Structure formats: C-alpha cells, structure tokens
Image (cartoon, rainbow, N blue to C red):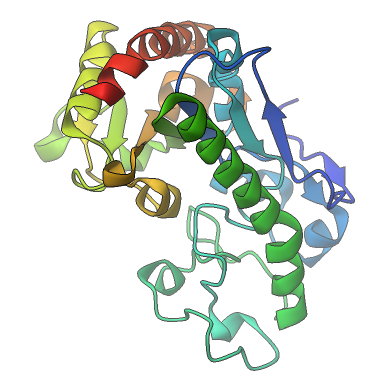
Length: 294
C-alpha cells in the first residue's frame, strides 16, 4: 500500500532521480524537491512518529504527477530522500539549535522563520506540527545529510538550469509541490483553491509567464490563486533571476484532488489530474520559447 514507508540505507550516490528527454527541446526544467519517499532505516529508528505520521510532510506522488515532462522535451529532477529527513527547499544551513546536543557553528542560520516554525533544513516537526525525534541530534548528522542529500540535489539543479540557459538562451524552472487541505481554503469561506502559483510576488518570474500558466490552469477547469499562502520557497526565490534569463515558478497542487490525505494513497482523481498536468506541460513546452523571449 502507498502508506507504507520503504526503508533504505539511502545510498549517498543516489539521493535524486533525474529523468531526461532523449533530446531537450524546450527551455524548461521541472523539479520536485519534496516527493522523496526513501526513508533511511536509522532515521526511522530515531523518529518518535509512525511511518504514516512521517509521510505527512511529503508532497506525495508529485513526481508521478509531472512524470511526463521528459516526453515533452524537458528534464524532471526529483529528490529521493524525504523532506522530513532533509529539506531541499531550504537554505543548506537553516537549523534549530534546540534540536542538537552540541553547539552549532556561528554561520548557521538559526533565526529564519522556517526554523522558528520547526521546518528548517533538518525539520523538528512534520507539516502537521508533530515532533519528529525522540532525542537530540549531533551537528555531524546535519552535516552528513546536507552533504549527501541537499548538495547533490542542488548541484544537479544548477547544472540543469545552466545547460538549459546555455542551450536556449533562457530557462523556466517549474518547482512542483502539493498542498494539504488546510493550505488551500478559499478566503472568507469560499470554495477551496485547486492551484497556487508562487512567483515570489513577481520577483522570481516574469508576469507574462505566471499569467499564461494561470490561464492554462483555468482553461483546464481549476481554481487558481497567486502567492497566497505559498509565494515560493528557497528554490523559487534563489534560482528565479529574470534579469539573468532564469525564471522560476512554484506550482502547488491541492492534494484533495488526487489523493487520500489520511491513508496516504492515490485517489480516484489521480489519473485525471496527471492527464491535466501532462496537457499543461505540453502547452508550456510549446509556448516556452516565445514566453521567455517576450
């Protein structure tokens, strides 16, 4: 069943999965930093939560929803390590001193809002707010996770962006995520939102690109909101540099549309949402050169 956690030793040589097209034909890169579900056995032993509780932080099955990107000429990079183990959508050293036995180096960012919420690079809690660990960690453990997981993911992402920009003159990075039921309720009791597009309030992606992708989603029948409550995390804000011909847009898909959030299983709508996202990918790929040139 999907709710089970596959325990692995987490081979440090394979913290990511990169699906490339036979030939890249579009100036697009897709990334899924939070859909990893390979849980190291030593991490499971450290955790006070059961396997289903740990999976509350996953963007479950998002890599599968966007899996057809290579068929339309764009690479798809996905983390295989889980977000609860190491969060690739954070700075490398956003750490909570209260989580560690030893003192942290002075250069660690311990004052960020993400750390305050318990959701730093090494998270203190899962997305539902429950504490992950029984005991405190040592800093060497954080160093190992950043070295073996965070760094290879970002090395691969940087290479994909640079290869794309070199080959096409520009790059559009689509940062793929999902949002829980409590994250997509409409304002004032309005109907729940299906999609949130985050462009860091216009700083990470040209407005014409965000607007066109919003139109495509609306054309597929989805309700869309921009930047609220998700304006884009580290990946969108760090790599989105429109003045340097790199645009980044975060897409959050409501989990209720495609999965059972309680049982952590694909739902009846999974195939339909995947078809729609494949249609979206095809449209973006077809228009991306013109959008980036505009």
